Length: 344
Ligand SMILES: Cc1cc2nc3c(=O)[nH]c(=O)nc-3n(C[C@H](O)[C@H](O)[C@H](O)COP(=O)(O)O)c2cc1C
Image (tube, rainbow, N blue to C red; front, side, top):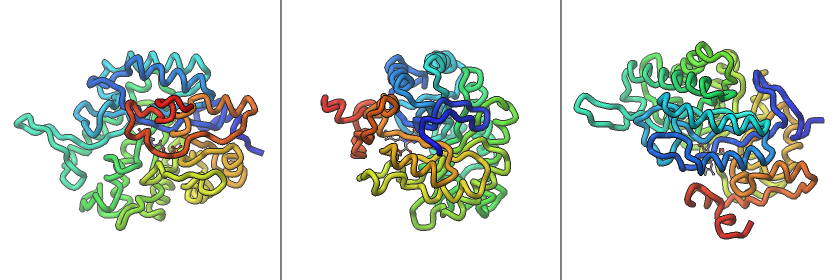
């Protein structure tokens, strides 16, 4: 019988339970991409709240990446000290921490000094190699700072997700043509990181489907996951486009990407993490015991209740109080609107 509180080891990562805080962009970082004190406090609350692992919010690998505001970065050695401080605090609470390495968009600097967003079709091979190196260098910084692992963000229509999607990538070279060409960038990034940072747990987050006409299908996503598993990736977090669905009802529509994740877990030996709509211990343990899925990750419920896992551990097993309203996407620093209004 698996429980959410089992101590587990998933490829280089020994954790005190099966619950991960999935990457959540708090939007608090200053322009230089470092961790400000206020964000440190958010992580402190999370680390004290009982999760076994924290995946950081979207951490850009590029200085020029202006896809959205307040993102942390590992694009420069100057960002290492503030990351190290957070990691030491998190480790002090017996929690593991993974940096989510991401690129919102590829912003190319042209000869005249202008910067423009360049989509996959317009990128030269040198541009692609530059991006691969940016991921590699960010992983080296993550290792130097003391992270337990890195997660390659290949989901939610950010740069890598667009690159592997047939809607955005119409390239006719080795980085396009078919699903194997489109995914070559993921392979190259994984291989580059595993060579320079072999001690890190390397994970990948991916859409099980783009859920749009002509987008990445479940069949293609499955092929990509199987290829990455063959290469030796340490874990795969299954998500999907439109990741934060509204209207989640306990026992009705929790774990909404579960079907894909369950069949993937049957087909590969790689540990599978499932995100999206976990709200009750009952349903989470049903997922764990009816499939080979190893880990479950949670975002919005921990915005409302950072101490949710400790609450459950103490015996108060009522479901998460998060109502999946998605107001947290628009509130200052992505705080829960109910908490902001004193309605905890
Ligand atoms: C405010 C907010 C910010 C998010 N930022 C990220 C992010 O930086 N990277 C990422 O992969 N997913 C991000 N997500 C998506 C979550 O990690 C998760 O996949 C999604 O919310 C579904 O899980 P949940 O039902 O537990 O919230 C974010 C979600 C929210 C609500």
